[in-house]
Image 1 (cartoon, rainbow, N blue to C red):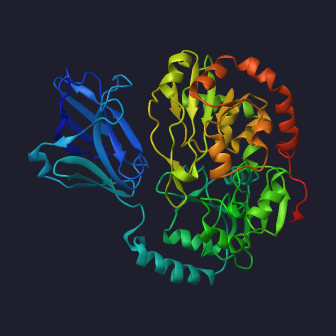
Image 2 (cartoon, rainbow, N blue to C red):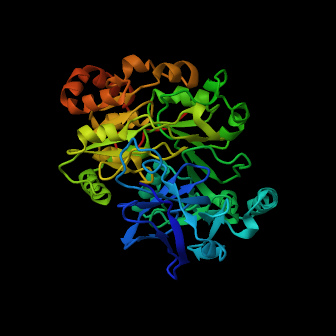
Image 3 (cartoon, helix red, strand yellow):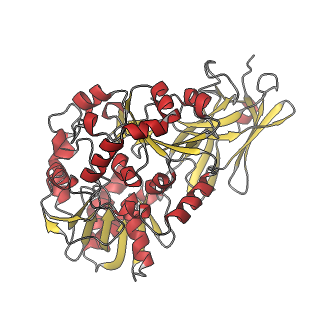
Length: 509
């Protein structure tokens, strides 16, 4: 039995929350949640729908980055629908507006520096539009061109400031923590993206593409990044740029993709100019040094120091950190923690440098076997977007927004991945790894390829299906015992620098 949910009251509250009340009978909707789904990224925000007689009431708090920029369409979804039931179980039913309510739209509300608009599309479909966090003087192609070609050069003529600009990433975050611990007398500026970035204590947020961001790039004496700086950036005299990169390369990157199907030749041509802006490249292990130098077209100084992001794995307070993270995530001690961290797929790109999440692991099937004594922490790659079909709490927890991946490694009893560089980091723990390599031949031969013989070097079994992953998790001790030798060889080959201590001297590339 189904019934079209109809919103007959929508209102913004003084606290910035949005209340949606719907006509939806209990017989048709015994349990339900309101779903706001992004029109372009296949992401969702869900809130419970409270029953009041023959009506449902849901309260949404869209601020603080809960809704990123764009249009979010409203759906009602049955939380107890069977996995195979069409419509309501996966996508839900669109929430439509009563004609008298629709006539009073749009309704605007400013929440934490962002304007939200309650509106309708396609006649009577309810949606919430989240505006840009940039000021009106910073929006649009023309204004961005002026900021890049006039504002940025003008600030390059002004004196440098004793500030460190961090471009979000686990290693820059670790560098920030160490500078704070040492009491460095500098200002800390943290680049944010559409209110999606958690700014660490003691740092000031600087929104990407804002006037303040251009000024920071022009005037900060030090910049710490885990990826490429903007193409217009030009390091000036007195500036220091530290490139920590984002882990050891398992899959091919940069110029090593020149002859591949998904190579971005415009980006590859820019690599020599981009890498010349760095003062030093931090290498996570000796294996990575020649590959990073060649693939990133970098010929400068290399600091073979390990990944700063992994220092937490060796810290004296790591047990206390692990307890804090478990508490924050609500993970009880009686649960085995499985961290599922797949990488992106180049053939699933929907925009430059952005990829659709591929739902390769069957969460419902895994829950049916492991739900009593396991918890599955899902960390999507930062470049991917999309829902987690079949995922439901408390078995599945989406931890993609957690600010430090290494903290998740610290509490994980086992890592399930495919071809993510997190395998190098997790190897420091000595805990088991499983590889859900369901598309190994395609990924190896067509999509990316590897810098090592993955099939013989992987420190754990290569598994082709959800069933195989589940069976391996049920027999984890035996699986780990069978891979003791290859795991030890992997650690000897690729875990040679990380120890939580001070780095050795750098060398020229």
